[in-house]
Amino acid sequence: MTSPSRIAQLSDTHFLGADSEPEGGGAYDTSAAFDAVVEHLGDHSHLDLIAVTGDVADHGQVEEYRIAASAFSRLQVPVNVCPGNHDFDAAFSSSIGRPGISTTKVIEIGNWAFLFVDSVAGVMEPGSNGLPVDPPGGVRLHNNGCLGEREAAWVRSMCEATTAEHVFVWLHHPPDIPL
Image 1 (cartoon, rainbow, N blue to C red):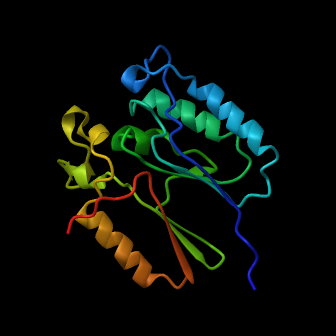
Image 2: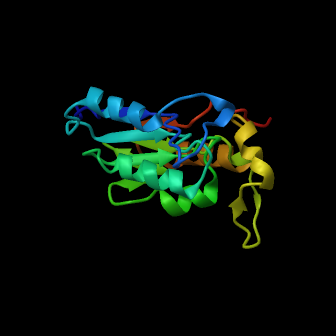
């Protein structure tokens, strides 16, 4: 028998930059909410991983990811982050990673394969370098769970390729998979 894996999940942290208004006009203090979660977790050194499943930032701005990365750095275990519909690819990719914080798409722990999926990847467009980029105008923000054919095919291929006994798919939204 293998030892258990202990994972905590956080989602919708919606970190805000200085002087930013929350999307939709709601009044919330994301930093205070995160502090309360960390306090609730207490000594979390027994965890193998903390999975953060999207909407890390409220507006997808570099400053918000830097604030989030600083907050996540306080956690005493590895943190892996995947984007949600509020997270914009370029700012997310360039600003969230730090020692102990990753954006890895596949993590294997024991007999489990954890797949981290961008549930809004279906709205991305080819950039000038051929890699997918977010469309202009904040379109990503309003497409909940638009899993694209490439991302859905990647999930299927990873499920077939892994030697792990179990596969767990982490994502922000229940996906709307094209038929």
